[in-house]
Amino acid sequence: MLFVMNLAPVDGKLFVDWAVAGIDPDLNELRPDKLPGGAVVGLNSSGKAAFSLCPPGKKSETFVLALYALSEAVKPQPGFDAVDVRAEALEAAGQEGLTTFAAS
Image (cartoon, rainbow, N blue to C red; front, side, top):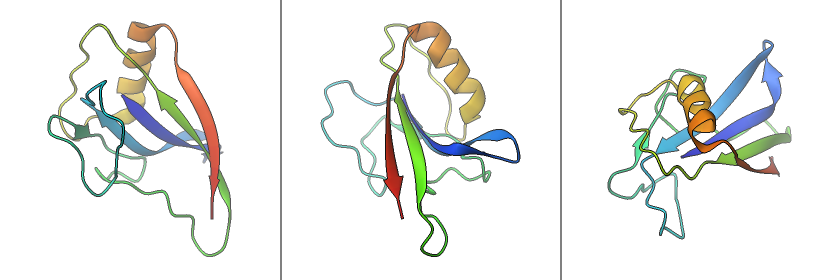
């Protein structure tokens, strides 16, 4: 499972920009415009099952990418609640891989 989140909370809450589940562990590329078979997108914090990572204007924002490799199947349906499923993924995985990046 992959979650892209804004490093700065929005209205005091975690803001999820993109959430994808059902990713094949052998996959070596993931594009927001063409997901592989079996992948499902959850609702971002704007309430859309979409990628929303473009900051308005020339403003730069920092994002956190969280990746979970799960041995137990957590199989959310398309349009899943990203915050709830991320909590389930962390509990099932016990660990997470994190990295940050900036976009402008």
